[in-house]
Picture 1: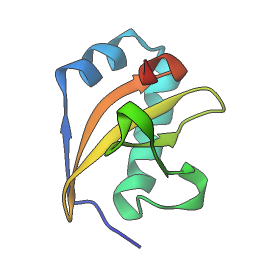
Picture 2 (picture 1 turned 90 degrees about the horizontal axis):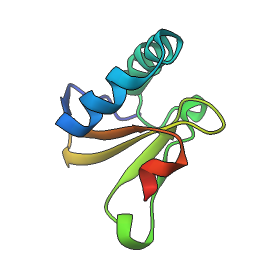
Picture 3 (picture 1 turned 120 degrees about the horizontal axis):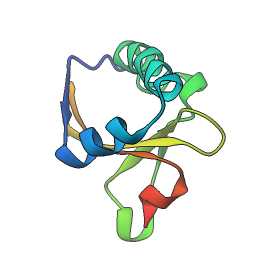
Length: 89
């Protein structure tokens, strides 16, 4: 278990979040609660990215939607972007 105490939200994440439906915003809120308690909870399907996104991680909201993030310190992460697989572009 790896509790997260602080989440920093990038301006890109904020813009992407604003464009999502209220249904997705509610889902992100619920997933963030799980993420803060244990960022590797199996329900999130957290995984390390490869290639040009090496150093970043993502967790699942739905089959097609993800939150892209990075570890800043032991208990702090930065949410970089949210959306469908296009966030990996």
